[in-house]
Structure formats: structure tokens, C-alpha cells
Length: 267
Image (cartoon, rainbow, N blue to C red):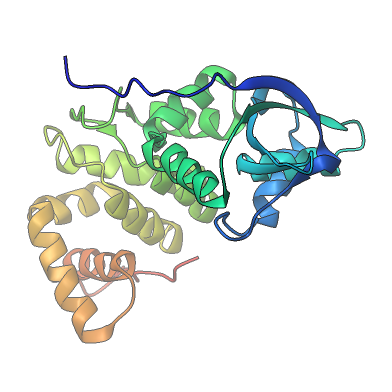
């Protein structure tokens, strides 16, 4: 067994603490984000609150070590005057700051894939909408980060943005085109490609021919597409999405005199 720390200190106390006796030390705490506070406040529930971590001061007041956004939301809620807290002891502010760093540095971030599956289980409207459009195109989200297979994606954020910017129909058509172009490619459903295609389809919804668009991109690998897109971007600037949309539109239009398509504007 690897060497472990045996000087674990005193057990913390578990208490309900008045929100009015809690302070934020700006020497080490991050700036409070009002948007995050409002989000917590709008959906405030004890089942999601957990316990904040506080350091007891000689004055009898408390300093927040972890959980300042939850505390702030609680302090603004008309039905809340106390919060559950883990009370720890520190010799000074430096000790509090070290605990703050350790708690936040060692915390494992929740991936977008984990958030999606948890949201789907919880009945989250956003996750359900993403699931519906993916399922309608014969696609799904990877079961875990890195578990790539054909017709699975980990680009949940990109699909969500496409739904909001370009709508269900354009997003679904983009997914189907990628499936038709590279049916056996495990990483075909990349976010930047979904976005570029949905953008083109939304702009040219009554002009573009989906099978022909699939045939146009099938002629090149994703690496070749992105290499051409990067050349476009270096010449004219703009985002990667825009450069890829330009590349795809050029491939589709090659040899055409009528019913050409435009790469569209970002939304």
C-alpha cells in the first residue's frame, strides 16, 4: 500500500449555520458569478444543496472554504435562513486557502457525457431533446467518455448548440448525412462536422440534396476536410466551423452550374 497521511486532524463538526454569520474571504475565494447564483436560486432544493465547508473564526463567525455560490443563493432565498455545513478548523487564512485549493484541485470534473446520461435519467428536458434527435437519426451518445463506436457521439454540447441555432430538422439531417458518408467510422460524429453541416442545411434547406452532400464529403477523409478547412481559415480568418462549412460547400458545388449552395452565417 502506498504511504498515506495518518495526521488527519480532528473530525469536523456538522451543523446548521445561519447564513448571516458566514463571510467570504476575497484573498483566496473566486469572484462570485451572479449567473450561477441565480441558476442555483431558481432551482433551489435541499435535495441538491449538499453541505458547504466552513472555517470557524475566533469571532464566532465563519469563513467559506467551499460552496460560496450555494451559500449566496441560500442567503437570497426568502425561505432559507440556515445552511448545512461541515465545520473545519484552520490556524489562519493560509490554511483555509490550502483547503480551498485541495478541495477544488482534487475534485473530479463531471464530463459532458456523464452530465447527459444523468440528465436523461433525471428527465431533464434538454437531455431528452438531444436524445430524441439523435435517436431519430439512428445515433446515440457514447456510454462513457472514449468508448467510440460508429453512430455514437460524445459531442453533446455541439448537438445542443445545433438544436438551438439551426433546429431539430437541420441537426437530424446533418447526423444522417454523416452516417451515410462514413457508416463505419467510429469518430465520424464530431461536433465541428455536425455543426458545419447543420449550418449549411439550415441555410440551403430547399436547395441542398442530402445524398449528394453525403457523396461530396465521402470523397475525403475527415483529416483531409479539416486540412482544407484550416487552409481556408488561414486565408480568410473566422472560426473552425465557418472554415469547414466553406470547404464542404465548395466540394458540393464543384462542377455545378445550378443549385449551388452557400456555407451560411454563424448564429
